[in-house]
Image (tube, rainbow, N blue to C red):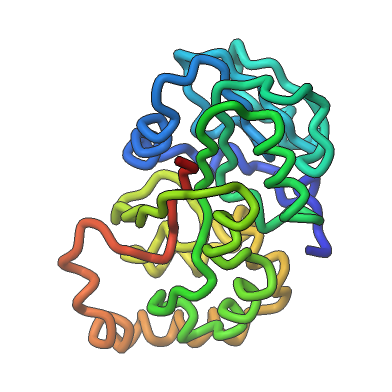
Length: 243
């Protein structure tokens, strides 16, 4: 990525509010862990409030936007975690691994400092079917470049369970596919600014213009009418949990 979260992160916490349904999946995967490390913690989304959390995040802009909490917050990087072996009951990483400079090293660092489960919310770059890629096919290439293959997690962390994460139609966390049933949201530059993919892609004005036209004349609704009856959708997000 050419733009850091010190830039992307402006107003991030206003648009990326954790969705409680996704949060329940993450907390269930953490099991009975009482000490939890959150790697690439951003502004603190999805951190459990009933456990002892240590958060590590490289961007000071993101750290500034954290709400008040009991978590210990450290500025640092996944690739060099400043902790002893087996320091935490569990660790978590939410929509962050694709931003790491050395993904393998970062994940192996998580394994080193964690004596229990490792829980990661990520995206499967082999997934196809999100309609926005019909307008911006570069998204597929970007995902393939940034996202580790799902098989890599077991290779780097050990045996892992992979579960689909259904995205609610009214998802409160404004990541890339959160608005799958609210297409007009992608016309809003403020909403796009909270999505790292759009910063990486640069000028998408032609694609956004086409989407605007298709929404205006009903072509989008006709083409993707099947989505409008769904409450949740598999958009390619996956929860990885080591076993």
